[in-house]
Length: 199
Length: 248
Ligand SMILES: [Zn+2]
Image: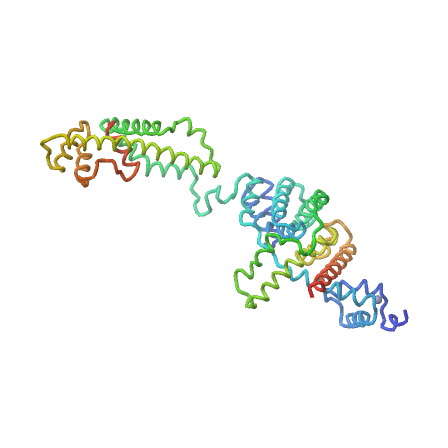
């Protein structure tokens, strides 16, 4: 059975109240949604709360998902994205102007999992540097406008294609491409500035 | 501009091809034209470099691990149970819960229950239960309290410690009573002229305790006879047992 078929079967089972099917969906998508929330919202705490909210929303509205109208992933992404935008609007006023030197959040304190599990063979300095780089790129991403940020997250971090992104964001594909390019260029300029200051 | 047309491409065309160039999906001829324009055009060249650098920065971002309890929290906040697999009792066992409960009852409860139903045991078990409940109420624990026990982890922890404190206090009180009793006996021993050997004295004292079953006496006489009796009991459970026996 294809992945799409498996998922649509799971969704159908869920709508009949099958708790095991729902757990399977949570298992399949929680990592992806958590990462999307984390990169968009910036903090591990917010990401955890938002991921939970996304699943609550999904659980309540699962019946409204129409298998024929598009991939489940697109629907999941739309639900997530809408909650992220709401969250952004709500927190816009109490958000402190963050700089690239702002304190590291939970995940930036810890080395990436791949480095925890297996020593990458890099000398310690290089590992610390890579850890630092992760943090700096994460902070720079948060400085992009929400439109550009969500576009690059979906494309470069979540590996979605332009069509899927266009459907999830409900904008034309051309707009998606333009936002991705502007987002990438803006990020590069921010990081270039940071590294020029350091050097 | 003449230079741009010389390279066979204008800025808007470059712009339109930018994404495909970044995604490396242009034909080699198109790619060559695109790169030529990027090298020559002062405004398009830096754009391509920035977009490509940004893409590489983004690609360097690694996936983060979600918190360990995230799935459980999600399930608890949606279905109300932390895991459907757990709730169903796991996949390998297909026996319904009621069936498994009955088996468990047959193996563990029924034999004891049959014994209890025999008249000669019924009274003893009744008395043990009675003395146990007396012990519990003496330690300040009432059946009413049990109904109000909260099962939140922090509450359970609190209940555990407060109950432990009550039991320890109860044990300390009993210990004091026995301590006083043994001191009185020591004083008696001193003021009584014809004193038997300590072992015999111990034996006598135990024999004086009417209503104690033989087992208990054997147990006491097998202990180190010079030790003050019961004053140094190892645990509250032994004290409770003694109390039960006395009541029986
Ligand atoms: Zn140009």
